[in-house]
Image (cartoon, rainbow, N blue to C red; front, side, top):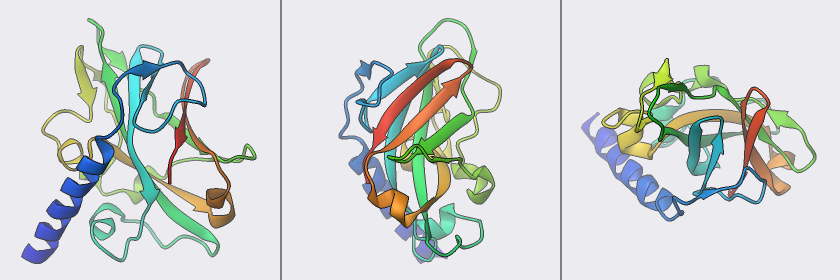
Length: 179
């Protein structure tokens, strides 16, 4: 177990470094926004730290993923998302997050497939001038965001772009994802 934990820590550090290259400058809520930049939806700023294929047979995927193997022809993809409230009042972060392929097919996350300490699951309101996941949480320390897992057909993953859409009522923010 010590080796697994050390391996997970090393991979987490590599993931954080890889995810830190993006700008923290907000952009308009458009598909042209890229992973690593941010969009504002409602009163919350969202940033994708990393989007990649997940292999639950090796570290850190084996620690992160708790679900069953995907159906034939589908892969597991993990997205690390952070939601920040820059305002002076508590606000709810959206739980309506989907990935859309180049042909408009929508894929919903499977939060039940992510181990609890890594899961993107804002509970209650995000306090003023803070982010979810909160500073000091396992997911924030290891991945710069909470994890969402998607089961996406390999054919859809090969076609670009894949787009993350965050929805809050009628307001939507879209970020192009990079594999």
